[in-house]
Length: 466
Ligand SMILES: NC(=O)c1ccc[n+]([C@@H]2O[C@H](COP(=O)([O-])OP(=O)(O)OC[C@H]3O[C@@H](n4cnc5c(N)ncnc54)[C@H](O)[C@@H]3O)[C@@H](O)[C@H]2O)c1
Image (cartoon, helix red, strand yellow):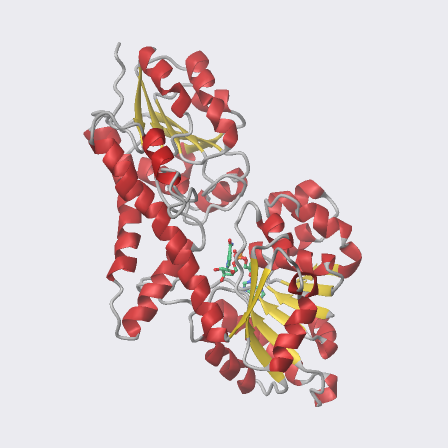
C-alpha cells in the first residue's frame, strides 16, 4: 500500500518505520527540515540523536528502499495521487492558558497542505478511496471536525478512522512491532477493510488484540487509558509515597512489595518519583477534564490528579529548605537527568527541566547538568533563557559532581543506580543528595553513615548521623 504520514516525530517516525517494515511504501512529511535530514541518513547515531528510540535507526536503515522523509510538499503532491492511507501524526498540545483545551492548529495546518492535492487526486476524479487516520491523540469528537476540514477542501471518497497510538516512549519500536493491541475506530466496512490491509501482520495474530470499534470509542479510550495510567503514578507519590514520608518506620520498597503482590493493584506505575511528566499524560488529562466540563459533567478527580502532580514537584523541591534548612543562593548544584524518564531524549514536561528552572529562580550560582541522551534538547530549551549562562553541561558523573554541595537525581537512567560510589569518591559532606526517583536507595544507609544528608521521595528526611 502507499501510505503517507503527516508528522515524523516520535509517533509518526516509529509508526512509519513499522509500516515500511510491513512492506508498505511510505512517505513521511514533516515541516522540520533538520529532523527530516537526520531521519533520512543511514547513520545510526545521527538518527538516534534526533529521536532516541531503541531500534528505530535499525528499522529505518533496513527498510530504506520503502521509506523516505521529506519536507518538500511538492513531493507529497505527486505521491498523494494514488495514496490509500494518510496517517495524521501531528502535535496536539494544550492551548496556552485554556484549562486543557486542545490546540488543533498543527492539525489544521497539515490539512491545509494536503487538502487540495487530495481533492485533485486521480486528475480530480478522486476515484481511489483514501482513508484519513487520526493517530494523534485528539478530542472525542475530532472525527466530526476532521470530516468537516477535509470536505471544506473538496475532498471526496474518503473515510475517517481513529487509530490511537499506545506506544510507550523509550520502548516505542518494540511496542509498535509487538503491540498489545491495535485499536481501529471506523464507521464503514470499507474503511475497516483498508485498515486491515495496513495492519495485516496483526489482524490474525494470536498475541495482538485487534479491536474494531467506532471512532468516538477509539478516541475516548486513548484519553481514558492515559488518564488511568497517569492517576496511578500520581496516586503512588501523592498517597503511597506521602504516607512513607510522614510516618516513621515505613520503608517504601517494603510497602510497595506488599501492594504489588495484589494482582488487582499490579506493579506498573508504583515507583515513587518527583513528577509524572512527558508529552502525553498531563495534556491528555487536561483535555479530558476540559471536554467533560464542556459537556456539563464534573471533572474534579481529573483536575485533582493534575493538581497533585504539580504539588509533588514543589513539595519535593521545597523539602531542601523546609527539612534540611538549605539556602540555595550561590550554590553549585549537580543535576542528574533532564529526560522525562529513562530511554528517551524527550524533555517535554520533564521534572528535571522544571527543577533546573526552580534552581535558577532560587538564585543558585551554577547548575551542572548531566544526562545520557537529552543534553542537546536541554541546551535548545534553555538557549534563550536569560539565566542560561548559569547552566553548565557535563560529560560524566564525576565532572558533574565537582565543586557541588547539592545533587538532585531526576531521571531514572539505570546508570545512575551506581552513583553512590561516585558520591563517596568525588564529594565530601556536608552534602545534600535529593533523590527524586529513589534510584540510589541501596546506598542510603552507607551514605548517611558517611555524613551525607538525603531527601528522597517516599522517605522522611535522612539526616546524617555524623
Ligand atoms: N510521544 C508519545 O509517547 C505519544 C504516544 C501516543 C500518542 N501520542 C500523540 O501523537 C501525537 C504526536 O506526538 P509526537 O510525540 O509524535 O509529537 P512530536 O512533536 O514528536 O512530533 C510531531 C511532528 O509533527 C511535525 N509537524 C508539526 N506541524 C506539522 C505540519 N503542519 N505538517 C507536517 N508535520 C508537522 C513536527 O515538526 C514534529 O516532528 C500527539 O497527538 C501525541 O499526543 C504521542
